Length: 128
Image (tube, rainbow, N blue to C red; front, side, top):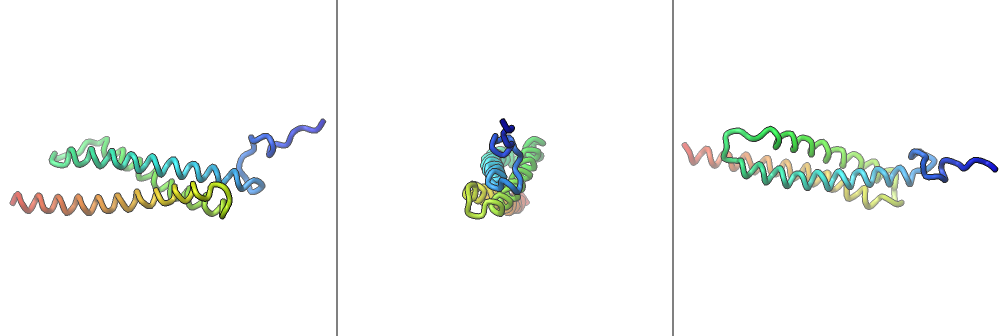
């Protein structure tokens, strides 16, 4: 009896011979990273605005934000790669959602930064 092929057993790594599995893995990774980074962004923003009047922010707020920023950038990249590999196949929708969530995180971060600068300018103008 011939040994079973690795492609059939489900243990084979994603490759050009099996693009559906490769795109599905990228799609799942993009989706998980996108959801996680956006949820952590909400927590970071709550902690940031709770400690806004303090002169110095906690280090964990910055560490968490930078970690989630890396996660969002990875979600953007994995989503783009998953979309490219899946084309119209399985995993395309998940990869697209992860890709969009990565973009949402980056846009939300920029909007929050601009909003924070305006609030800080308004507070400093009132205290003068």
